[in-house]
Length: 186
Image 1 (cartoon, rainbow, N blue to C red):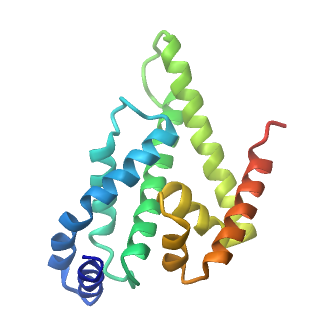
Image 2: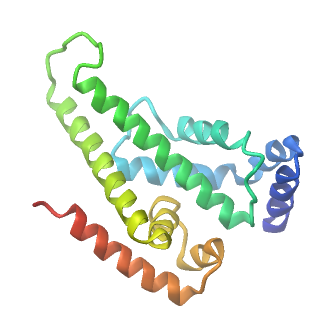
């Protein structure tokens, strides 16, 4: 099945728009697993953006991406994980903006709404730290996207990034240490 996915990705890159649609049923369950993991880490259970909505949003962003030179299945899942992370960050930004006024009528705060705002702030802080990591070392940020956001194993990450397993292991340790330092309370 992996070779079929790669073949369909290559056909899509060459302009066969229907190839992407034929590939989606082959990868849908894995995309749901990635989305479920990202939503769980973001603390968004029970909110308006659920697993299915996140997969569909990522699909809509990726279906028209003719120019992506998909390397293989692992590269595809890494790109999907990045797209889902961006969707969640944008969603958190909108929630954060709405919290600050955003043209919405004032509401009485409920105790559970405060926790959601805190989660939005956490998502934004992680995104900012990851952007800083990407500026410092882009490959470290890619490893985090694959491992943490994409739910990939070290081996899958190495294949997706075209590097050795040992490099991914070292990068994963460095990236985690860097992010922990950046996200530590002042």
